[in-house]
Amino acid sequence: MAVAAVVLVVGYQQNLFSWGGPPASGPAEAVALPGGGVSDGDQCGTKGYHHFPLPASASSPEPQSTGPRPGPQLELGSFGYEQLSGRTPGRLGIGLLFAQGPKGSLQVSRTLGGEGVAVEIEGPDGLVGGAHGLPVTWHTPRKAGREDKTHIDLTGGADAEVALPARALCPGYDGNAVMKKLVPPIDSKNTITGQPAYTLTVSVRDPGVGELRKSIGSPAGGNLLSANNLVPDGP
Image (cartoon, rainbow, N blue to C red; front, side):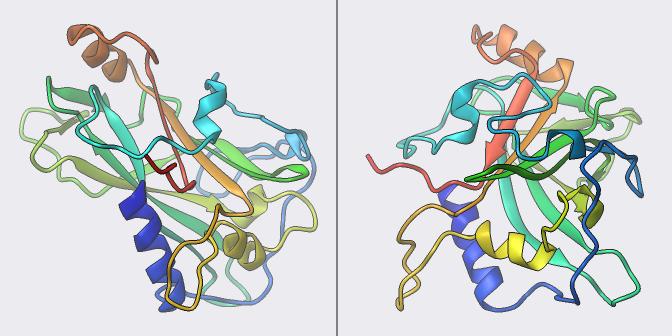
């Protein structure tokens, strides 16, 4: 997560993402989204909401890692909001980094258990945007003989991307403004000085995750993997 946070800040500061005009947010009700998935509009303003049954720690800073963590892992890569023109809908593109951990072999379905990806953005007043059932785009080539599976190995891991359309934002929220609050504050030397104002949580559920955990004697967490944009706590 420390590396992901640095990538995020650098990308934002160097304007690596496309910025357009104010996007249209969605309604305060669950609606089908362009490209797939369903918004969490009916949960706007709810505090602590997650589509998947995540533990409370899923939206808290992780401890600073001092070594390899056991079992499968999900982390956020760089992400940013883009709207190429005023006539195209905006979206928050989020990079996903998968790793199997130091032991075992992780295989997940290309549709992530048929449930897709869940994304929630929460501010001080509760949920400001989110969706579930979002399709994932894999950047790792399919392996021969694994037409419906992606094998994530220890040496290369796997990366993917999910997009949260602007229509998944709660009424009155602007995509560019939300993006700025997902970035941790920095000082004049580009040193991170605190946590982002908004918490971004991404989660997936796939039987392959639970199978790997069981094989290495670590059933905690079941089939769920999650990651957030918070800066890890210091040692």
